[in-house]
Image (cartoon, rainbow, N blue to C red; front, side):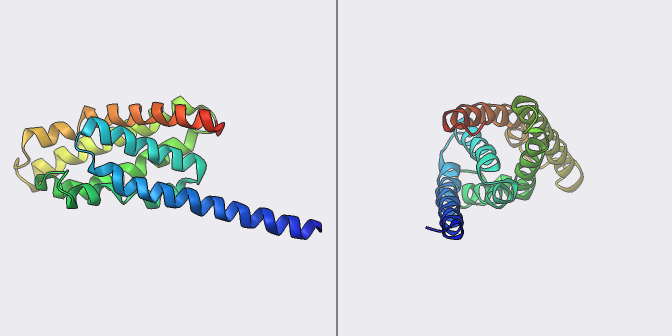
Length: 172
């Protein structure tokens, strides 16, 4: 087999591997959000986003980050009162990925902390702004609570899960 044929075979295998990973992560993006508890689905979705960032890159992770929140809303896992928050949750997932990706090659846990804190600050700030300025205090307190410290905790928990998974794959 010539060197060119070997390179073509390697490229075809890597494309097949990429699409296999992407299909698996897409399935997870559709299934994980229907888990009923925030402290179960949240860490698993965040773990998936971090794993996708490492394995497939941030662009693939950004695409998948847009799926879980609408799925959770459409399946009734997210209360309808959270509908105004769905675009903000989607953006916060993009922020988590971006913040993590900036530092991930230097220090995984620093990157995880940065991405998680940025996600939390964005959701906490925008939910209070939305509630105060546009909804005139109409969001129930439990909804506002969901957009506060649990976001930081679920992002950090997801990062620990991702770290353990990636370590077993020898991707970090």
